Image (tube, rainbow, N blue to C red; front, side, top):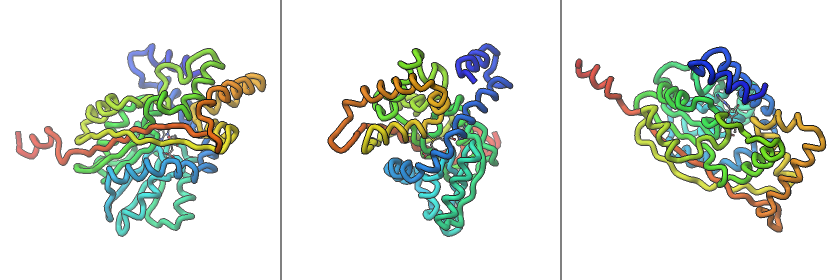
Length: 312
Ligand SMILES: C[S@@+](CC[C@H](N)C(=O)[O-])C[C@H]1O[C@@H](n2cnc3c(N)ncnc32)[C@H](O)[C@@H]1O
């Protein structure tokens, strides 16, 4: 489905809700479904590259023995799996993603690691079908920015946290600080003669502005919001390795790339090869990358709860 026409159709109405918006979301989720197998194949790579991000998320959220932790948009589940041992004894992890094939991969990985306190659940982070206040910790690595309505997702995160519960999120910083992926989007945009992702469509850099990210979380009534930057460089032994892996994992791009005629696909590769010259080293490619890390918590009680408790 052509993303632009869906956006036009959803925005023409008085609300983005409704059948067209649901269809649009289903389209986005389907794009992630189409790359689930690749996320399984590259799970160790994704976790190795994201290790510093994961460590910072655990530092920010401090999961404790006996607590319940929810990972959203888990993909192959690396963050929740890294947290699982910290919750024992007595605590548990729910690995969730909107794509069932992703949670199946995460479940198999938890089984292979012999983790008895990990379960999986298919959940949309914009509509988290879990009871209010049911988690001590919510984590999400590189997922929130793909939500068409991240403000709704942030409110949902607050809702499922218990009072005092903590959240830690990671999103990619600005496109120009992440050439490892920005170069691909630039090359595809140039090849197609239109911006990718199209304006208004959530993409990997849609929450790449630290001030906007902070406002998004504060507006959702999360407290003690802190945003920090974390360098996440990407190294690859060759152009071919980087290109194949990046294209295989890029959910929103997968369908576009697969549908290109052979000559256009070749021209795209040539563009990308030219664009990465600045990142070539004697040992392969070395790209800078930047993640934004956000931490926050649900306050022990909100103003309305204070009023209720004091009987006003
Ligand atoms: C870039 S991958 C990140 C995967 C994993 N968190 C990691 O860091 O390795 C983005 C993930 O977000 C998931 N996703 C996209 N939209 C979602 C939504 N609305 N609700 C839940 N998960 C979603 C995709 O299925 C995919 O697994």
